[in-house]
Length: 443
Image 1 (cartoon, rainbow, N blue to C red):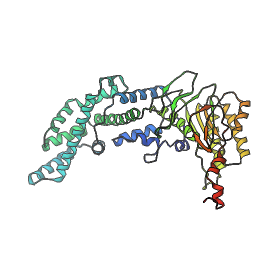
Image 2: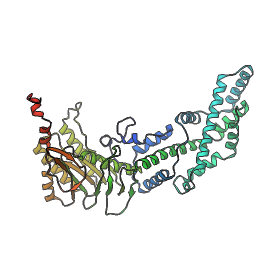
Image 3: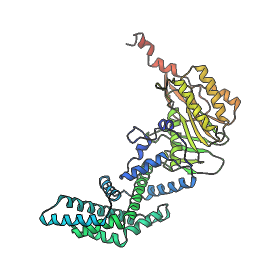
Image 4: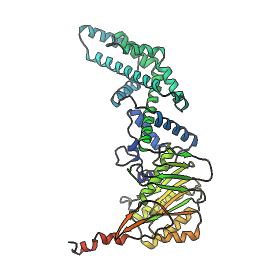
């Protein structure tokens, strides 16, 4: 079963994008090999919904966080070796003909094509020798990780008779033409299938090394799955992974309190907190490290967010209508009794205050009926909370406070229980002397 989500959610949380500023993917895009980067992308695109598979991946990453050493290969050599092993082939008659041609040219003078071929084969041998040294140097505890079987296969391949012969050729300053043909045959005929599996191992270790390093250097934690019914999602000290010196918070959603209702003034940090929560949930289902001190969660079936919904000029949709369609899309998924994480930030910003109040109350109350889902909703319209209290008792109310220093609002970014009463929009407007600027009095 796949972890359900969509492009809007990925955009809201800024999950993907190698070159996007502050994307989560860019934190981990440090792989050396092309295959490692492809594997990393696949992991980001396909979070897991099987607790056993999540735990297995976490165990592997944890080992590299503790014991992982720097990957010994460089990207240029890796690309050339992968191209040689994955795209070349060995056919006896053409190779014999090519060798004879090279032999004739060698008698006449130095042939660039022969030297290129010799350099390619020599580079592959050096590369495989580095892999062999790396695998043999791994801490013995690797035998207790999910990598055990693959490590054993790679060691078996790189220590077999053919490869031992190959490594002896690689020790020579310059292989003879006969040795070159023999090496080419070993690489592309006798051991090609096994060496492709070696490359798959290299890609896997490449990703493991990066993830372990990020977890270690940034002090991220690995989330724990649970099958107990007392918790949906529990995070201690969650923060945004792309922010340095970020303020952290504790958040919890349980079956009894499955709607987390968040209030706070503008600039109090609501959107950042909601994104931090959503990113943590997404990364936990990937088995990747989370920007938190500790996290426990029951595996969910998917996640949908509505944080940065915009109008659609090509379709003729206003901002409000685009918001309604987004809520409808999520409502359809929720109605199918799935275990989903739903995050709505500032519902119905694109309409008047009265409609926004009525619509937010209506949707929040309806969502609260779906107790198999984990819900996080924020709003400026604090009056909604008072009415919700009358309708439902499965809601946890928390807010991000504003502290006034004279006439200047400041923000703690720390959650407190209850509903805010802060309304500082006019104070900010006055502090910035907007009206005076319009009237030409701001001199």
